[in-house]
Length: 77
Image (cartoon, rainbow, N blue to C red; front, side):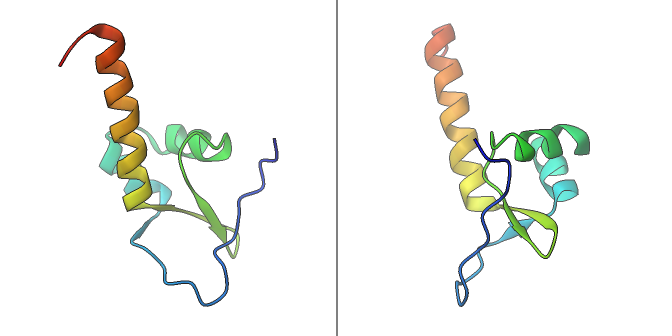
C-alpha cells in the first residue's frame, strides 16, 4: 500500500480541513499519534503542497465507525 497521500482534485470544494495539531486536539491525542495514523492511512487525510490535512467530516465518520465497532465488541451500548 502506498503511503503517498491523494491530492484533492483541481476545482474541488474543500471541506472543513484540520491540521494535524487541530485533529490532535479534536481527538484528544498527541500530534505524533495523529501524524502516525495519517501516514499509515488509518484516518482519512490529504496532502496539499506538502502539508497533511484531515477532512473533519470524514474524520467524524471514521471515529463513529471505530466507536461503534468497539461497542459491538465489548457489548456496550
